[in-house]
Image (cartoon, rainbow, N blue to C red; front, side):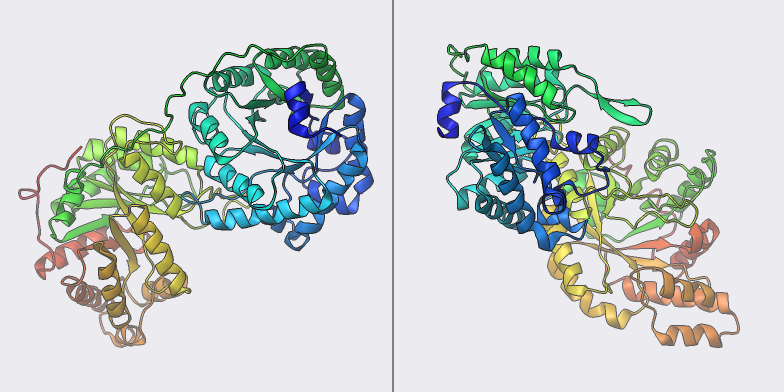
Length: 625
């Protein structure tokens, strides 16, 4: 049989359609691991392959799109990664006989890789390499890398293939209707990158229907002379009686196959919703046409990579940033959103905290039950109506990377400058049993994203105009269960662009002292947590139920023996503040359930004790907007 690239240079080849669509139609539930069927129901997989070959497919893809170690681990199948891939290739090889090429299908890992996620590029390459080796053992003719949204990840996959095999590589990104990848990278950027990485055929698949994909392919063809591939969905899915159905007809898909061919595509097929009926019509359409021979010479591709601009100087970002940059002491106090939409009281309380010397108010992003304003909306309200600077506590729990980017761009436009970026805790199930969390990225990825905005670029590397002026804080738990891991993560946050550190409430000064020495070496100012202790019960709660809080026995003994428990609790808090004052750059004050009266009394007491200055309104410059 002639080699794949030689055949592709002679005529337009047709790829198969959707394996998942066909398996679902044959009764396999969506919660099953489709890749595992290579081991448990190989004849069913072979039947789908044969249907596509009979329909006229020149290339069939192995049933291994999600058969990497990361995705298989969610089904408890990581140890079967090699067997699933090898058997997938063997099933396709047997079904294809000599009538079709066999492409080893490789999809994304299903986890974010650096700089957005915890998985390193090296770990990603290792996972792809494991899959490639098993597919080679099964006897594939080429590799089909498909449905990638992250350019760095697909480059890692290409490198993995090239490290083990000279076989052809088809590399496909998945895009929105505007032609940009799902992470915002335009074709002018990803097309040249795929070529330079070593792909033999480049293009797009999935996510959109044929009409939008044609425009993207035409854009790629204008700047690239590479062989092109297009594999659209059978239109956009529509909800019909609870099922997602793809309603583009075989005739409609075939008409666009002709248009793809005229635009210079040499490999055409289909993705989600595409069946053997679609492939039969596509095959008939393109085989009646001669491939485009007079494809225009590609234009000089504009460099899709935007150069980052210099970030705004830290002291110009906000009042809190200016205070810390000058080495002055800063006090931040928490305010919480109450139930309901009436927030006048919170705004008034924030003003009162400012009058008592707070440089900013921190608005926690906790998953509390009840109808409450989001931290972001309350932060904007406090900034705009209270003229009080906000430290916006912003976490990854409920949001995708794209959603967080939109949130923060909007927050910046409305005046928010200080952000405390954290991964967040899972949504509590006590009140809502079906509550779920997103965690598309963690705090390291979020910090990288905000730092990129501060250099004038979005996550896709595209310019956003003037750079944002976010003053970036991150969390650090000095008493984490895995100290080495916590330090490793902090160093990654520093590398990503963190500018200050906030800790949980500190009670054990002896244990915190050596941590401070090491934190000083990291080069970031520290805002130490200071809990406005309310009594023994509050201390027991903090020590037992709040992550990162360590309270020594001597403080419990002091509270138990006290005649005036509340007064002693205040004395302990002031003593802690005095100890922290010369050792850190600021305090982050929290109270039990966000009680504003307790925080106000503590601020007054700290002022009277000389730890902070009372009424700093006349001395503080208006913060930068």
